[in-house]
View 1: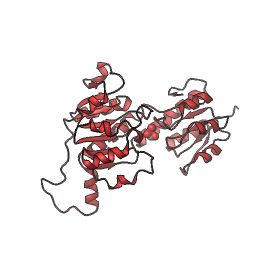
View 2: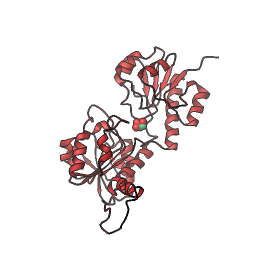
View 3: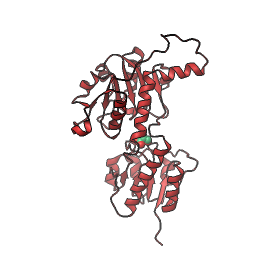
View 4: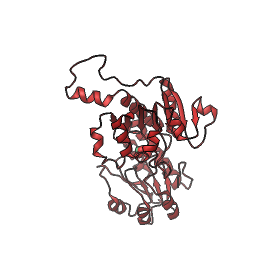
Length: 321
Ligand code: DGY
């Protein structure tokens, strides 16, 4: 019988995903979910044919260069691929895949949670109740911003951005967006296209980020683009922390140029800037956009479909390098 391919799985994955891995591969699982630093990762990859990592493991060019010869594919358990140097992988002949589509709904849900949480001061309210500080009620108490009927500015109308647009329509929001190109009318569904980011920012009551982390989007939200936003805007980011210059966002939250923010992603996760803990008008989540049981299963199956295709000699459906 031919030897089954060996797959290094860097994190603990859902039971059904691990069961399929063990059924079809010589799977090196991580039942304790222990974090692998670069050296541990490279050691664990010795003799493996494939790696199934998450965005929590980095594959910059120097790590790609040191991968054991046998590793032919990195089948990511993530849609984002900014933790992998795709050019270096391509040069080395290592195939890279991701898991698009399957996390659109979960990420759009968290986007709405962030939008509502920021606008309706959910963190402040929760802290107050838990600390036993809720002593009164009056019409002036904990007044937030209404979401219904407002203008949302979606930056990046890709797979997740389009689902967010649908959910925002459920709140009767006017949908505006900026992307590299305008969508066909049947997909746009009346959303207003802005050729420039600045033009979008000038009209949006809510700004929500749905672009990938690329050299072009890194630091896209900075003091200049914040200045282009309406005063009192609500800002939401469930994409990547690197899109935002955090010093500038913190300054804008303190000055109330940005009235409130909802953030699921940060620079330097999970060791985020300590200042976030003290900023009252921000609703914080720990990068859980895709963290539902249904989506985690679907991400694992999608990554496995890519592995199966590769080892069957077919082109993986979600090849990015
Ligand atoms: C993704 O899939 O990119 C999510 O951010 C979780 O890793």
